[in-house]
Image 1 (cartoon, rainbow, N blue to C red):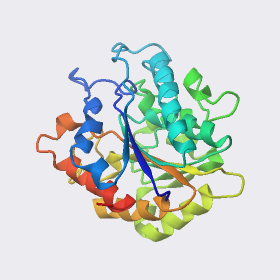
Image 2 (image 1 turned 120 degrees about the horizontal axis):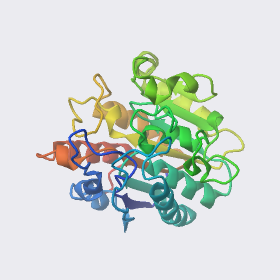
Image 3 (image 1 turned 90 degrees about the vertical axis):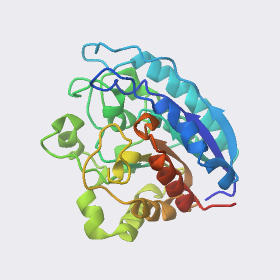
Length: 304
């Protein structure tokens, strides 16, 4: 990992619809909740502040389009500018989100800074591989991995111009435990592409070290200009990380995820990591914030 670290807040909820009762998701509170745990100081990081998102608009789902499509595109471009500038300074970037759609801005930023193909390590309990037509919710967060590889009839799949933000063969998806009875995450199409799909059961059977090495082989191949890491907090077991929007039983432990991340973030080709889907409004005692910040510290290395 690079010697300097920069922290950037991406407090956006526009890529994910409100809760079923109409209450807004307070992912906008996540960056400062994690900062309040001393994350920036303990990492000896530079704080780049936040990229503020517009308000959530598409409460009524538009037909065959992602919700807040134009705003997600604009926000992705604004986030990309900040990420690109930090990466260009040879800084390891930690983006504190925010919903999963921030991966689009992060990838656009690193791809711009590195002027070429980028690998993507996508650690998540869900495939996030729906399309606007198949998504159950219409939220960009349910389809953001598909969008990142250029799948879907939407400008969000073409933020990188005529090439996707990441090619399928340069992507590793780790830890998903969505099932065939939830096909709206796009698992069926995912299986037809050369994405390395290491499901939760395989992580358990192969072991964390083997999974990390398999991942690095994929994202450090010749022709790639580095790799980006997406970490969705729902990959953790809800017993230790309940403050997420769509918890799935039987996830990984904090120590598991830290051990998986450590060889990835320490690799010289690692450009940065984003953390998504932690909702402080579901965390009244701040225990999830403490666990998530400690996870990042254990993975990245505490410098205090």
